[in-house]
Image (cartoon, rainbow, N blue to C red; front, side, top):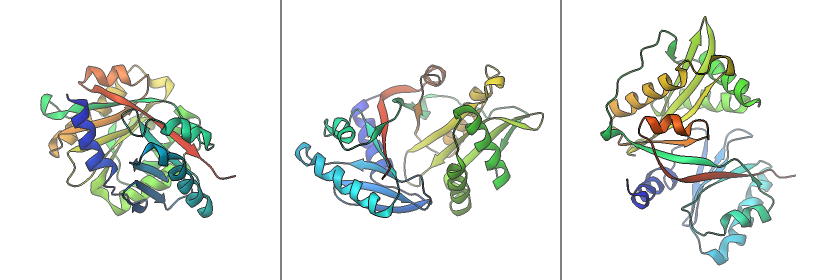
Length: 255
């Protein structure tokens, strides 16, 4: 898999062109950003400017979101230019988040079958989304109510753009994940992918992964992407995902 070609395609279809039902998309020649309808969820999706413009470009975004009174994330990839972006974000008061592995599966190169598990359900309503988020909160020990509202809004406004799955054991949600789609893009993205500690090593994560690979293939997508944690990376690698680069978010909250 050619890293440069993959990133060019990904930038073209997923970062520069944004379909986001949860907010307002604003683009310029140098920046693509999403201003969320919620207090959380705003982000810089793509950027392209000369190194000597880095500080001024960052300050423009800081001023913009500060005037709105909301925080935002600046998403970076190791292949991005300018190379001084990360040090400059830190100098402007951004908080560095955990690095993740940006991995891609060539769906044409794999066979896929739907996951067969009595506990696996595709979510269609707000209670199911609540169950999905309950798993995430148990795993990450964070308040994800904003994410619950975000998923509800996306499923309501653009149901074709997302599929949410929850694994249940005796009626209790124990694992959850989702997959997102963008029209006219060769990519689909998988997210969530978390299992409560008491139910790990039982194949739940792998079943959710298998189901989403199958759905992406059945919908004609060529590539499947994931921002993989250290825990997830070896699991998805067994299914054919290849490391393309590393990604890291930088968050800013106006004080």
